[in-house]
Image (cartoon, rainbow, N blue to C red):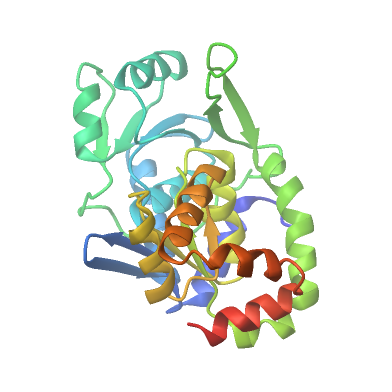
Length: 290
């Protein structure tokens, strides 16, 4: 079992030039390798040390899903800093409330979002900062499974949003069995590589983190980010990028199904028939039609 989540950075460096993240913006695609992601994470970690942000201090992270967002998060993981992630689509008033409740030492985010928190006297750092110091890959000496990792705020659907502290061990309790099972099938996975995840969830949410931060590195997979929940756009990306896994909430799946059945009325019958085909058979059929 992993002693803490910073060990994933060792995997990043081992994967080297394999693609880790692809951010899609209009007709542009911005790829980053695992080695680049590891280096940027270690640069953020060095920046936190330069600012004398200590083990157990808090940093508020507010930005769109991106390579830099992941790197800032892993920079905190390396130093034992507690991340307070916020949904980029969230209300600035809620961000102000979280800021007051968590007392972070630093704000990190997209410049347009940080602008909404300028009334704060907390220092800020843009995710696109280019003057970060040389990377420091060494994890904090006292990291362990009991180390606090982040404070995630509940949605507030049934009551006032509350900040929930997650430790490294909370995440690893779910990740350990997944990694054990993946290990059983790793030797059969080569024909399917590289696996590609199309990610449409906020990285500030637990499911979004599992499908964007924790599970893909176990598979040396690529994570593709697309913020526009537009069915034709998602279908085109799935086809063009040969996506293996779509990480989405049911509402997005319903959007896709409605769009595709409008284009092809016979599709509904084929989908019902596919339920009787094995998972391997469906995978083979998908590859034949890519």
